Length: 444
Image (cartoon, rainbow, N blue to C red; front, side, top):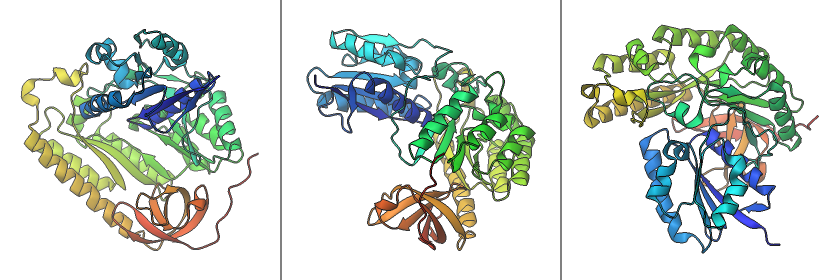
């Protein structure tokens, strides 16, 4: 019997990448083979993001392109957060889409696909608060690092955020299950793990908190690097910070979403901390972990943002001196409290654009200063992939999350090198190996 083929195109965050790996795993055990291109595939799934409007518009445009290339009899489906948010509306607006499947219904994919081949059009978007896909073995895209979800959903309900609607309430996996999955990936030769959650450091399985999880996963034999994303500033207890500092595998980098540097703006966003409390979290982390690098998320143009509030964001960037930042223009999402704020609070596109440009210039200027000061440092770099520029260049990451380009063959991928930083573009480094390559440690 000929095995069917499936192609999944992934948009959005690392959680979506992990979910695509789960979908491939669930379908593999039902006789599907993954392929790298939609043309000729029996099943084409678009795994979507709903965090900003332009992400959804990209998906709608992409669905139009995919329809033209589908082979006769192929099934086209939409999965992920956009599927969860729009549900039946996707079937109504696109007659070629046969399946709309939310993040808690991937276990149903084989049966849904069987029905689609019989002409059924289905929506599966119910939340399942017990679903963690513990019996599904993910088919990992990356042979160098593994994304491991430890938590699904979110309880914080920031006024701009659609995630509680698309992912449901927060629930955590059992610590023992996360450790078991980590042991499995290490046995496959993957020695860097990234723990995933919407507010990952609020993890609690009823018995163990995030500090317990870091210590337990960090102690898995053969694991060399442990990262996590994304935490919430409120949940950096002294226990969590101590676990980070005392667990050698935990890397010296924290992505700490700020969103705004203004206490009044943070209150409108319902972020549940003040400017001063954010700075306190930064200070406690830096005091406990020498050499820590910090990256962040920042939104400009949130409803009601004044010139003074925006200046507070710039001043906090200058005070913290982030190593990098993901910067976003506010995008109103249907169903979030931000859409119900007074219309006169809306920030004009011209003002939003100007503030965004000023923010990017500030963040990049600080990052460049910090990176120039690092030239000559020697770092352990894990080579992850071929660099986009090609030409015998490979790309790696240091423990503190610096991107480093190194001249060398693709056979170095998966290796650790000690590299001297020789140049910087402001965002990334170039480096030269200064000692022989070392093989990865054996598992066990």
